[in-house]
Image (tube, rainbow, N blue to C red; front, side, top):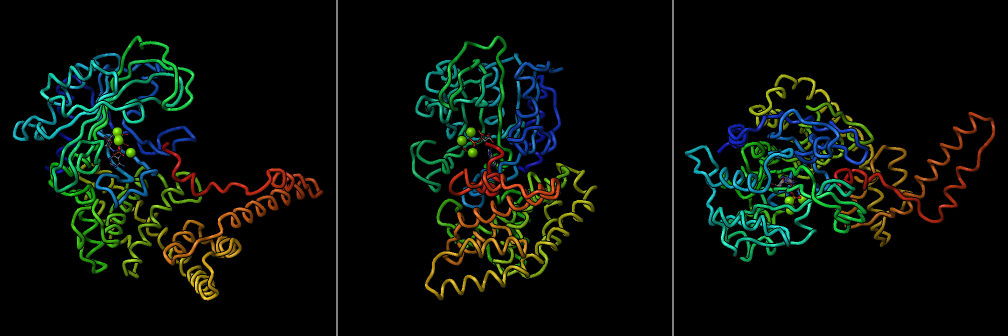
Length: 484
Ligand code: ATP
Ligand code: MG
Ligand code: MG
Ligand code: MG
């Protein structure tokens, strides 16, 4: 079943059950410095859940475009993590609760494909439930899931909150057993690759306060109006229904991977063919390329453009990683003019605006690749020399000074220096680099101050000294922090 058809059936099922179909919000559509991109279907509905606004419907459904950069290190290595993915959801605003949400999900996934459902084998479905949520257990039992496949888990896995005072509640997740070829028996607690999580049902039931962490807080009481928020990974469902090993092999992603393999002359899947078993590094790279090119397309499509901070920097890093992966596979030409049109053709059935807007998207993408390639040309020789010298001298670490020069003189980003050094088996003196960066920032600040007042203001240096010791370099972490 094509991904676009899974999406269509999902929306049709919930629409037939009284839900308003709400379009996806654009990826960057949030005004929150801690969250650069929408990372779940419920984000656009938060004001309703918090009672700040009254929705015009009491039931809604959507397929939300999502970005989760914290998952970037998993991409290509697990069967189930994309930086971009689509979350299908159904939402109840004070309307139905657990007894409505559980059968709605169960019916859709187990209804035969010939009757408009997804036709998953009910015998292979597992559900996890929060420890004391007996109500959910009882409702799951009525669907026919036996207790052996109902697993109770603690707050870490099965309790949802926003980490702030407000609505919270237990959740319940659906997993599909992909069989012994994928890993050991025992359920989701034993192997999250064989047992693939595909749907999370959140039961917003309580109001919490004194929130110390995601797991430590006080419950004020039951919410007057209880809500439902669910998220089903569209790509994960597609990988199950298309009978492929992982989400980089579904119809919306695999053609990009194939084209990258064709260009670089690599044969994909030389390893065991199963992503979670030892994957050949080339296979991981091909998956990363496919994922990142699609993500770049969707981000630029939603108005993000490459830059040195915030959202634009996330996009820049993702594009650079894809381009560099192509080069590491031996491709020396421009990559994006070959790959981006393939990504467009994959996604246009669901997002026709990408085809209409492709001229603009491609302009940004191709210009960014040009700029990156000249940075690479300038910096790589210098870096290679530094690496060779360090190794010849028997060293294992590139100095902070070398990393800083690369950054300062050639615009060579530190994350790239770290990555290339690691490939060569070397470390980088990151503390030294941070110190030099901090000094440079202070100098700039002092200079600006001096220009303004005519005096050299030493207080900027004081701040650095008073901080005592290394000044934190956050550029790298900030990129992956935004959706926590
Ligand atoms: P996992 O434990 O596999 O990382 P999660 O528990 O972080 O998933 P949720 O926050 O519960 O995921 O999101 C709801 C659903 O969205 C998941 O059940 C899954 O189907 C899908 N999903 C989450 N993260 C990704 C991702 N990076 N790529 C593709 N689908 C995802
Ligand atoms: Mg996750
Ligand atoms: Mg999970
Ligand atoms: Mg989950």
